[in-house]
Image (cartoon, rainbow, N blue to C red; front, side, top):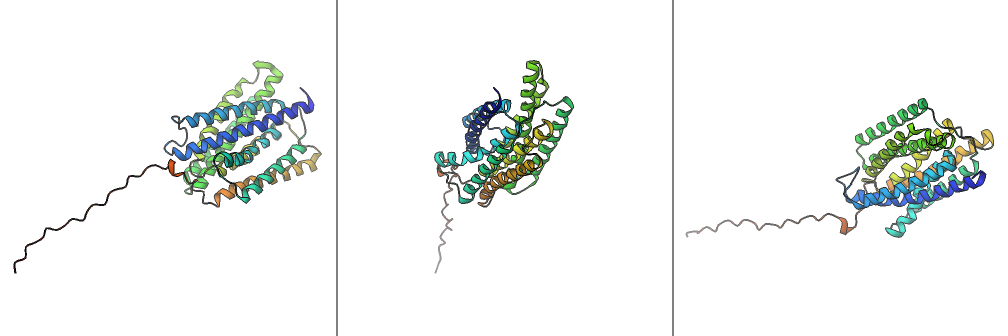
Length: 311
């Protein structure tokens, strides 16, 4: 499959992947706010396993998209996850997005469309062993720093966004290793690039655990928006610098692509601001999901024994 057919298939797979990730994120957030005792891996909750299955489906579709399309296109399309998550949450959870969130969704979509129209094609190449170590080391350092920041900050919304940022870095680098695998297999067959598999497993697992914890204190929108900003930014930067991907129209096209990326990021940050302005303390649980609090019966006041008063 060559030319525009491969490119169109890549875009289609990336869009369906974003829908699967959106539904998985909604389920993860529901599990997080109803099971605060297990922030990273609530393995006893069937909903968490359902979210993992949805994320796994999204990952498989994402791999297919990376096989047929450039990393600098596929990763930005993943930012549509939050655009899809808003109407899905509105329909199934009866959450209406505010005006700021709707404006942010439109800006994100327009920015991504501009980025798609400017992306050129190049002969992608896989990473060498030395490059893989450098990329993995830098990513692990960024994830560790953001995790430490999350442990240090006190405000819940900022803690959740730091964890979501770490998850975004992990997911982005996992996609980088997947792309390296895809390029290596297409050129060398199944015998090539197996050394990238541990990187895929490590960063994908870290992304899942960190994203699950990020939903505990700030609801759905702020953490998901943070992941969808950081993930494509990290992966696209590596795609442009390591895999030889380019933009059309030379320097002018690159500047326009930066403007489109900024517009998309601004839209996603509006979605984050819309949630943070509400307090960022986690969404209010329905009454039926709140834990029952025993009501202590008030004790009768202790009556002093009546004294016989002798006149």
